[in-house]
Amino acid sequence: MRAIPKASHYYWDEEVLKLLMEYGPERFRKLNIWDRDWTALAAQKGLAVNGTLRDPRTPFEKAVHAWLRATQGKSQTLPVRMVQKLLQVFGW
Image (cartoon, rainbow, N blue to C red; front, top):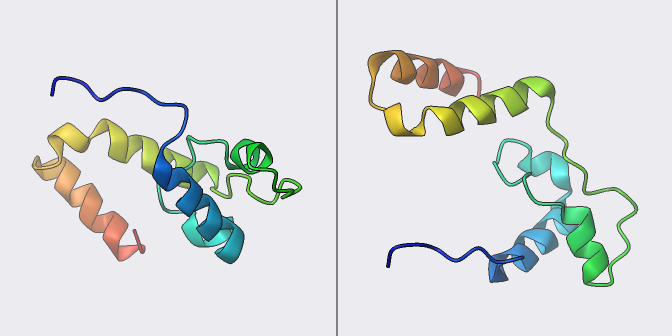
């Protein structure tokens, strides 16, 4: 296997959508799932959510996700590990 084919959506997207509708997006704000337009997927499935599935993250939380994504390949370096430990103290 040399590449993972890009799909418009994956089978687990519907499961995540169900969880978002059941528990609300606030509960999932620290998960990096917000690159997907959940409102559009719900509309595609015929579900009316009226904008309730918008990205609930603050600019700080978006910055943390961006930083974690950017440092994923360097996660064993001391500076990155120190910041990760600090994030753990604050509930990440």
